Length: 438
Image 1: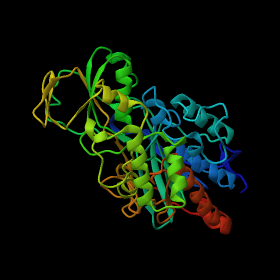
Image 2: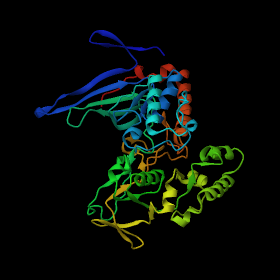
Image 3: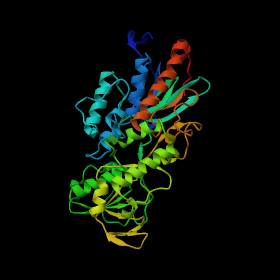
Image 4: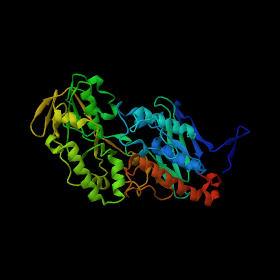
């Protein structure tokens, strides 16, 4: 579509967005108010500049649809850059983690490191000229049924400064904040009396600071397993709390990635038979994990993933350390004491630190004023693999399919919006509408 022209101070300016100052300045009693403005967006507003948000913006751009990306942090992929441990690598081979229209460099290993993946994302955004608006915290997004547009209110600025509150007005809203927006830290009895540090895995970088110490890792997902291994390799003495049954699979089997082999088998066999095959081969490679305190769920790994979203652990060496006793497995915690932890089996052991590898959750309910597409209790779509809601609302990266799912969502969303964009450009451009101030 043609660029839009606005008048600023008597001069014409080419700009894909129209900006309107709607308030702000000094208040009564000497108090200052936040500056207010409104931005009219011709294409979608995308909330989140992680892989899902970037992929959506690129797919839209390839179809000639402009968008604006809002990101609360100061960088793209903030979860990867700011809240992950140093040794992290992609758990799946790189061909299953590529974003649309750009492959990983050939020289990258099969499982790229955290820094390599971040570098890939930065090049991706630069190549397609995606420029998110950083430090924009979306506080509220609501659909205006009278006008037929979304109002997305965002605050930019530090707490000790006068913030700029912007209302972005758009025909479409793409939620790309992901399933892992906020750390989950369960309340444990005695947390207030434990004398050592208690930190979430999002704050853990390396086991170097824990050398020679006894550390309790709570949570046996991929993060908990890898943090325990990292601690062990830095001469710490880790114990791993395993509260529930868990599927541990080798990262590779029969010379192929377990994930890739599963996808191939599912083309020919039902989930039940593929699950049986994976468990049989896993037992041959890893042995009986139940002997080491890692009971398997009754339901197979793929079926469990489809039903609950619980991802199997892909072992990268942790199980070997558990077998040798370098990493100890413990049951659920009953309570924390000043210098020790009491477990539900009555055992009491001294620990210097506790790391909570207890996962993340969506933050969508805190800002999206909508009750049909997303569940209030966990902020995930009500429909399995749901990517499209009503009134131009979309979700990218909420299908429990990792980066591959993010790419699939981005392509579907772009195709869906393109149909409206091309069919009725006049209706899809909000600049002809009259919007009352609020």
